[in-house]
Structure formats: structure tokens, C-alpha cells
Image (cartoon, rainbow, N blue to C red):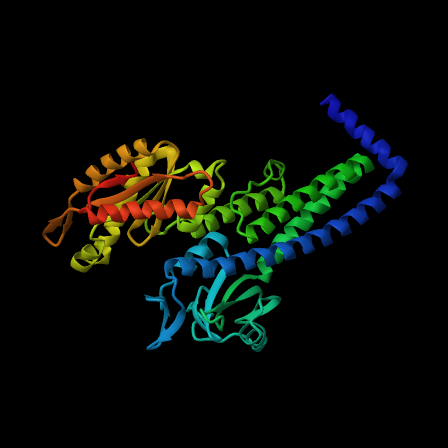
Length: 420
């Protein structure tokens, strides 16, 4: 308490000696910090919305690689019907607080936006300027003043193209201006309080605190810039997360958004395994990717399971095999759903060790009994195991594993084949 009294006394002495220059400095810093926050938040909002709009397209591409088109009044993506399926959009809205929309042509077909009656705003059309810039010119478009049912939004529009590079629709991500302005207001209030505190302490301390604040904003800005480019492995600066103001909340929120988007773009939604893109990134991040042991696995006669028992039972089989393979490699490897009923394994060990583990996995999978409508059935897997060679590309390693897989298929399936 004595130390606190002494500090207060010193502050009062400094204020008496230099109140005018310190007040001027405080005013200058207040104005500067307000402008910095507004510009920084506007920049961050644009980048965040751009990332979400792009990732929305990526998520649908992972679900089905086909084109967007309309058939009998239904919105399709390849062979997948999207009409009235709002799970992906609602999950993004829940995780990020951002509204998202898929336009086909200029018409809203899937959206989280609601009208005054609580109904989704499907069937409405994009503004003329959006149609001109995005659909007409094929350009991305950001606006800080999008009119959505009488409410101002920040909005980012990304053209959706078909295989012929023709623009057939629009991906939209938007946030209410009022909510962003509230965040800006909180930031501004925090900065004013900091500046008042700085005025009481002294010009030198003011400089230190302002510098730390600007560094925190720069860390968040750099994090968002990396996130917009698809870098989900970065970590938020501990200096940002350990702060005791709104910047720490923003830092934690951005990390949560990063994790949510990372799961959306890197995980197979059915099996929770890595998807192809994330698997290749995992390999690329290894010190010696050419030494990784690789296994290509395939469920035998999987099409027959779907045809005989339905896709829901097929999904159950896929998840079961995925869980067994994940447990098989444990912490010494990683598994991806490579496509359909194929799984690709990366393993930090020897070919012999992975082959032995897969033999046990094969027996475990063969021993599982699936029930459907009073019938029961078993499944089996076939796998090819190999290891990268010096100077060989990873694609060639995968091809050799694939060749071994098909060798096992030709020999009767339900076996693990490795190179001699």
C-alpha cells in the first residue's frame, strides 16, 4: 500500500509539471489509436469474410467435385442435391457468427439470412452492382454497405465457376455493420482508458503501452492474413492471448475461427480422418518425407454393400474401418480418406511393422459383424504397403502402393501385400 501511495504521488507530481504536453500527447494517441482500430478492424473483417467465402466453396467441393447446376428446380453439386440442406451453412454461422449464402446465378438458393418473419431469404436476388461485378466481370467484390433486408452488412462476394471457367453463381459471407461497429466501439473505449492511464503515468510509459497495443493488433492482423491464405498451422502470439483487454478476446476468437475452418477444410466430414489435401500437407511438413512408409487400403466389394444395404450402412462401414485404421497407426502415423472407400496411411516406422499392424487390423475388421434388416454381413480390406525411395516423388510412392493394392485384389482380396 505504501508503494502504491508513492506511485500516485509521483504521478501527481508529473501531471503538475507536464499536464499540458501530456494531455496533447494523450489526445494525439487517442485519435491515432481510434483510426488504427477502425482501419485494422475493417481490414480484418474483409480478410475474414474473404476467407470464409472462399472456404465455403472449398467445403462444397470436398463434398462433391462436380459442378453447381440446376435440375428440375433443385440446386445440385455434381450428384449431390443441396436444396434445403443448410447444415454446412448453419455450422459456419454457428462457429463464426458470419452469415453465408450460395447464389445460383443471381438468385439466393442457400442462405443463413432471415427476413423479418424468420424465414430464410431464398429466392431473393443479388444487388445490380454485385451482379455486374461478380457475375458479369467475374471479379471478387467487397462492400462495407450491403443492404440486406434493410440492415447494413459488410459483405464479400466470390464468383463460383464451372469447369469451363464460366461464372455460374456467387459465394457470399457477410456480417452486420452494427456488430462490427460495436466491436470497434469496445476497442475505442479500451484505447481511451489506456490513454488516460498513460497520461497519469507519464509520456514514456505511454509510448511503451501504445507500442505493445500496436504490436498485438499487428500479430492479429498477420494471423488473419495467414488464415486468409489457408495457413491453419500458425499460432497466435502469447503476447496477444495474455493481454487483459479486448485484443485478447479477439485473439482467442480468431484462434477458434482458425480451428473451425481448419476442421472444415482438412477433415473428412464422415470419418473425421484427414482429407487428401491435409494428408499431403502433413507429408510435406515432415523432415524426410521420402522415408515415410505408405499403405493404400481399400474396402473389398464396398459397392456391393451400398447396393445391398444402402448408403447409410455403407457410411457405418466406412466409419468403422476408419476407426480401426486410426487405432492401428496410433501416434506413429496418420490416416486419410483418400477417396470413396480408399484410405491412405503414412507411417513412421518400417514396412514390416506397418504390415504386421495392418494384418491385425484386417483380422479385426473381418471379425466385425454388421446387421441390417435382419441380415448380417462381414467385410474385408486389401492393402498395399511400401516405402519411399531416395529421389522418388511422393506421388510415385503412392502409385507403387496402389499397384501393390491391386496386386492383392487380383490375388483374391482380403490380404496385405508389401514389396519383397
